[in-house]
Length: 322
Image (cartoon, rainbow, N blue to C red; front, side, top):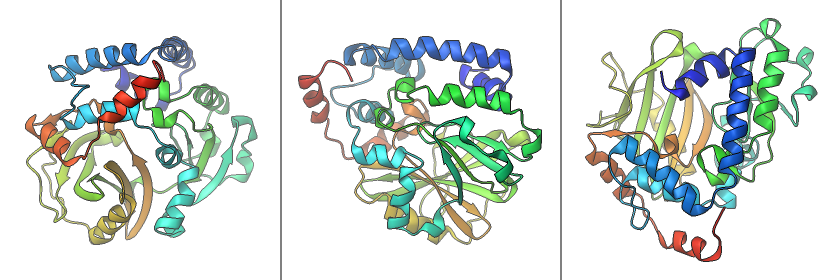
């Protein structure tokens, strides 16, 4: 079991007090070290991780692959717009302007601290997450069964950390941390569609398939005509029936509107029956550490991403650290 899987199983989901303590100590050390690092030190650290995963040297000077460009972009190309769209609170206004508020999951509350939450005023089921990070969600199916003490400890830790220093996704750095509570959408009826968009156009759509206990175990990549592609992203293809959803045209249309003007972004959408909801705008898929198989597709997707690497040299000419 990888560290990421261990954290998800034993900390994010179970919130065991001892595991929470160990996790907090780990984050304390990691953030203290990461936040002091220079660009040169960060590049060296990312390069070591990249070589371990991909078996080749990360080309910072002339990135060619999809994952190489993610690393250069996440470190050297943050922008106020990316920060706004990565913020799960601020992005809602932008979505309302672009495609309409009917595509937003209903909001139940936004809080600066866990202590501000009035659980008595909340429905029986809801979703808690932070606005300034990734993966901090908690699915609450019965509010009377939750351990508020452990939940508070979990979100106190998360609110105290700047997610940018976890993996140097610098567009997260300037997001004011908050807790967001949204309406619970029944998982059994929800499908997740992730559109990989390049140069303002959606090219591919990833659809995940889950086994027992909501464990993802398969992923199909489709073209815009629902044609199964010849490459995979981390997970093997689903072997069962996967018919094209009736509202796929609507999903594509929304992705086209939201990706306009971006060299690359992953537009995440949910479909609950015939209802479409916005998920998030993702600017550094898997933080640049997910294999495409066969490997040639890492280069093919990279070629779709128009990229001005002179930004890196301009940043380094003015600063030695983020």
